[in-house]
Amino acid sequence: MSKILIIAEHDGSKLSSATARCVTCARQVPGAAVTVAVFAANPAPVAAAAAALTGVDTVVTITDPKYAHALAAVLAPVIVKLAADYTHVLGASTTFGKDLIPRVAALLGVPQISDLMSVEGPYRFKRPIYAGNAIITVEAAPDRKLVATVRSASFEATAAGGSAPVTALSIEVATPTHTRFVSLSAAASDRPELQSAQRVVSGGRALGSKENFQLIFSLADKLGAAVGASRAAVDAGYAPNELQVGQTGKIIAPELYVAVGISGAIQHLTGIKDARTIVAINKDSEAPIFEVADFGLIGDLFQIVPALEKGLSK
Amino acid sequence: MRKILVGVKRVVDYNVRVRVKPDGSGVATDGVKMSVNPFDEIALEEALRLRERGEASEVVAVSIGPDDAQQQLRTALAMGADRAILIKTDRPVEPLTTAQALLAVLRKENPDLVIVGKQAIDDDAAQTGPMLAALWDRPQATFCSKLEIKGGTAVIVREVDAGLETIEVDLPAVISADLRLNEPRYVKLPDIMKAKKKPLEVIDLAALGVSADGGLKTVLTEAPKPRSKGIIVKDVGELLDALRKKGLVS
Image (cartoon, rainbow over all chains, first blue to last red; front, side, top):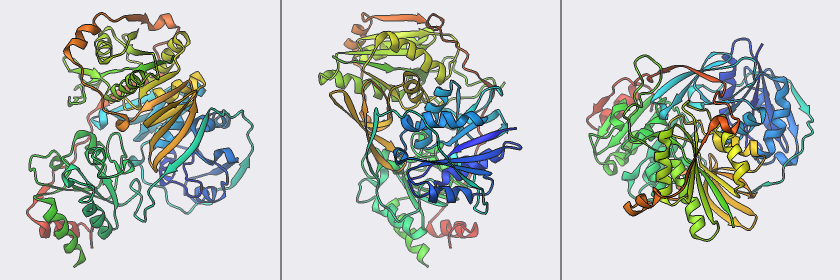
């Protein structure tokens, strides 16, 4: 039987929705027992959230001040020790998981499958390659531990409604001191989080300046949406890096995605393919974004966006 | 003085629209333009800048792949790497194998810093950097957008989902380069000529004692399901009507 260990992702107080998506993925392995592990300085609030997720069988907590910041070099050795009792180790394919999980896999001496998008069997999965332009089915040997990251956009977050037992564990391992956290600068925002938002409004290079990019924030607020940006807009300094959507940024799957002044480079399209409905606003009728858009509107964004905002008020 | 090792992967050029072979056996690469993985170019550029600032004395480009990967190593030499090493194998290798092979080279080269791209744009795995750091038992700094060397340590700004994280690591360490670390230089013709004379060593993967079989099997390659074709609306009113009809806006 598959015993799946999911490494919880959190900011010290809140469990990431990416972890709830991992649970959904893990549950698709037939008959699997699912454990969520919370490493933190104070795991209680995160563990409570994990225990409340439907589909979680057990939650384990490992408490230590050294887990206050998620450093892969610090976490990997203790995860390897914990993993001894499990057949699978999963983490979200976020910057947290992409940093940590390969380090765990290498210490275990097993290959990793990145970005699981569907479960075909306990050791058989589909994943995208070439920015999603091809999908491969990959098989791993069942006699070795299966280590993988889960593509968040491919799985819905499991709902609350569970009540799994929480067990505190104590695991002794030597912790490296060669890697030290210094600081995290995160823009405080009241807007929905990009990765889990139901609606996203993204702006591209055509916005032309950081000041003009306010149009995107304004429309997003009207819609109760998160804000995203194309790589070109981030490179140009119109929007911060954490808003980048695409192959090398965030891969998202909102109900509604509104692309404003984004031409639709293949790297960007990779990040939005799973959006339920895509709206594209662009003055170039030849822009590739229109090939994937459900609704396209050709014209000047500086007229359309304010008009759209006004129309939404009615 | 410091030695920097840079990973360079031969990949299908980022401008090529890849096609899945009809028999599901893989992606068509015959006659397709191949290039240095763009993130590895950024990694190399950073190493070259460190050398130009006097923070390093030697930059060694390492690739793993078929004989043809020498072309990408020549590009790396033309950009400014001092020498190159090809770990030769005709089989496609997984990141764990790449990390094991790079480790074997590290043991001989003893670099102070290894810089690789954060991911390759073919398999999009994003594993080699952290796997190598793990096997080497050294620090890793993935998604690096700013790098500063201070004596025996490096201070790295990382592009993470929450924003920008700064960490400090002791050297030697493995760094994976993100997009905004730098903008790689263009190669000039005289440099291409000069690169032909730079040393390029070829080592067989088997000679490093590393198996080419990483343990995963790709059983099928398919094209993704296309999105159904949408419609062009004529104005904001029509767009709002369409969105309201689907219940997407109120």
